[in-house]
Image 1 (cartoon, rainbow, N blue to C red):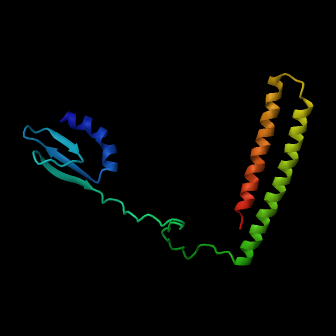
Image 2: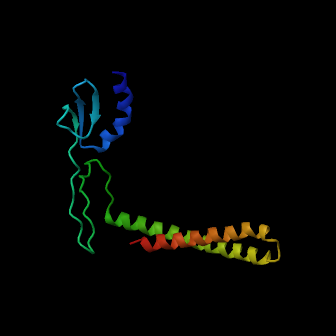
Length: 148
């Protein structure tokens, strides 16, 4: 009986992925938990999980459909004009951030240029700063491109 308790924790991860979990007992009384039913052993179903629904692959060039979930009645709603105002505010904030980041990039490039004769180990932090500002500019441009 102790063997069953030692084996059970090892089989629990299988139960999460298997569709059916069986408890099988052979002629000698040994209990085995498995996801494969055998005819030589006395097996009973412990749990059954139906397979997940499969969906047909989407046609080329079409977006996959998402399941529609109903919106709760007390969910706050935003009017179209309010959303346009929010989108405009967001664009203005991103434009301002982009302008600041471009200024910081120029300052970092100037600092790197001014320190050009320094040893390489002194230049690396300046190069890292330039690279950081370049990535930030790229991300902000991408975010602005994603706006409607």
